[in-house]
Structures are given as structure tokens and as C-alpha cells.
Amino acid sequence: MAPRLKLRDIAFFERPVHFARPFRFGAVTVNATPQLFVRVEIEVEGKGTAVGASAEMMVPKWFDKRPELSPAQTVDGLRRSLQIARGLYLARTGFQTAFDLHAGCIGAQIAACAKESIPALAAAFGPAEIDKAILDALLRGVETNFFDGMASNIAGIDARLSPDLKDADIAAFQSGRKPLPRVAIRHTVGLEDAVEGEGGVAGADANYFKLKLSGNPAADAARLVRIGKELDALGREYKVTLDANEQYTDLAALQALIDRLDRDSALRSISSRLLYIEQPMPRDITRQSPLGSHAGRSFIIDEADESYDAFPAARALGYHGISSKSCKGLYKSIVNATRAAKWSVSGEKFFVTGEDLTCQAGLGVQQDLALGAFLGVTHAERNGHHYVGGFGETPAAEVKAFAAGHPDLYADNGQGIRLNIHDGDLLTGSLNTVGFATSVHPDWSALRTLEQPKSL
Image (tube, rainbow, N blue to C red; front, side, top):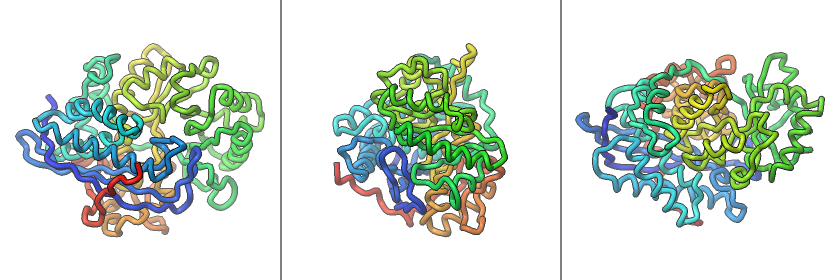
């Protein structure tokens, strides 16, 4: 039986993060954004108290892309999501499992946020970050690591939010996991990134590449041709994924891109190595647009993953995959991976992918990397450190503590301490530590309290 816990406190902090290079995806260019830190204190029944932590970037214009909102307003929407979630979680005062807490609050969270015009994807951010910190505290309280804890279903995850599954499906999936010892990084090429020359795609220490699309088929095709030439010059095998971040307006626009990939010989390098296309159309249009003949290619949803029923709905439309992001909820990732495994038994392949640039070096990248390794995600978008320049403005003592605690993950390559990439892979060995994939917590005294939302 999963251990029960009682929440004592939830506190939010943030740290400004300035990018070393601009990152453009969709219709927004990000040069700076705050990183959230969550600190929780719990009492584990019969075990005493424990403290847990989580971290995530609060990225503007991803969770909420409404054009009438400024980037700052969409970040404030995430801050408000956190505040609402804190109130709901702390209102549940008895002992219960970690998943009891999540399942008991997520519906009320979505409803409360909707009343304040916060969309479901942003609404889920608050519970997602609190859940990670609670899990960290719970694992510390019972003195076990993430991989063993999840294999034994320490959180008590069941099928109450996913009626297409049975409790036994989820438990069996978790108990059968053998975490990956290494996960390949997928190097993201943003729309502002150089293609050729210094700082271009050929300089990345990666075998997988994620290429951002603008929504303009002709411009995207021309840029993909250039990228293909650079990647071919590497002289090694590589694979690519494409990500439109909702920029293709409808199926007709998507068809124009697919036609070019199918017929343009100059795009053969990209097309022949293409694993899947991520979130081509806006989330609202996605739910109304069966892929039809396009379903022969692998497509995944990301921003359209707004609820526990999103993956079954996407499957009915012809999608075969869905992203795992701890900023959308680690429990939903486990449920969706269970679905993918169960559906794939019939021979048709369904899958979960790792997509997240909001994972900065330290807590964020370690916890999401551990989640992916547990689920069996063999390669993941993982170069947030590329845009921030390692740990960014994290205090030196904190950086050194992470490097000492996780020497397989970090190294000083002459540009300061940053992710240590081994032949295109990240190693997961040091994540096998008491707690949620970290032996280190941030320096709480060096963080400022979460700002009050002011522009909603």
C-alpha cells in the first residue's frame, strides 16, 4: 500500500533567467524568463517530516498563446495557477497518498482557473510543480529513490482519472520498468538559431535534432534544406523531429509541408530521417481535425495535451504519440505511457516522447530526465542549458553542489559548469539517489519569493 502523507506547507520562489541567445518558437522570441522553485514540507504517516523541491521555467506564450495577452501576462497566469493550486492542496488536511492529493484537486483547479480565464494547460502547471515537490519529499521521507519508488507505485497512482485503463494496467506498467542508464539529447534548433557557420547546427554534440517550424511551408522547406546539408556534413547517422508549436493554421497548410517533404529531393535527407512531427496545428483546431491520409506519418500532440483524456482523443484523430513533460504533470505522463504500451500490443506503434526546454540545469533537468528514463524515452529535447549558458545566474556555490552531487551529469568544459554530454547522451546513474532524482536542493536564501500576479 502506498504511504500516506499530510501537507504542512507549500512555498514558491523564483529566480530571473537571462538567455545567452534568443530562442524563437512559434510566434514568440524569449530572451529572459523567471524560473520557479517549489518547496514543500510534508508529514509522512509513521515516518516524520520531510522537505521536497521542484523547479521549472515559467515560459511565456507556450502554455497560453492567446494573441491579446502579453508575454508577461501569460507568465502571471502561471503564477496565479500556482496560487490557486496551493490553496486547494493545503485545504486537504488529512493523511492521503500523493496521487490522492493530485486527483482530489486537479478538477477543482481546472474549474477555478477557467473562471479567471486561465486555460487548462496553464491551469495544470500549478499542480504539476507541487506534485513533483511532494514526491521528492515523500521519497526522502521513506528513504528511497525515484526509480524504485515509482516501480512500487509509491504515489498510489490509479485509474480514477483515466477510465479507459484499469488500476492494474498502471501498476503493472510501473512495476515492469527498467530505467534507462542513458538518454540521448535532442538538440533544438530554434527559429532564430544559426544554421551554418559558428554556432550552427553542425557544432552540436548530438545525434538527434529537433527543428522548429514557422508555419510557412515554403520558408520552412527552404530552411530544412539548409539544415539537412549541414547535418549531412557531420558524416554520422542522425535523426530529426519537427515541431510547429501550433503554427500550421489547418490541414491544408500542413498538407503543403507534407507534399514538399514527400516530393522535394532536396528534402530527402530530412524526410528520410524524420521520426515524427509535433503539434502542427493550434490545440483547438487539433481536436476538430482528423489527420486522415496524413496519419501514415507519425504525429504527436504537445500543447493539445490539456487533460487526461487528450491522448485517447488524439489517437482517434490519427495521432500516434504524445509528449511527456513534467511541467504538464508527471502522473499524466505515467498514465499516457501506460496507454502507449497497452495500445501497442496489437502491433500498431504508439509512443511517448521527451519534449522540454523548460528544464534548466539542476532540479528541473534532473527530475524530467529521471521521468523520461523511467518511462523508457530514449532521446529527449534537452538543451535548455544551451540557450541559458549552463546554469545561468545560479549562485556558484549552488552550481558546485549540483556538480559534486551529480558528477556524471555536469562538468566544466571551459565555459563553466554545464551538462556533461557523453557521445550525445546524458547519464542517469547519479539520479538514483534518495529523493526525486537529486541529492541537492537549491539555496533557498538566494531566491526571491514568487511575484504576485499583477497584469491579469
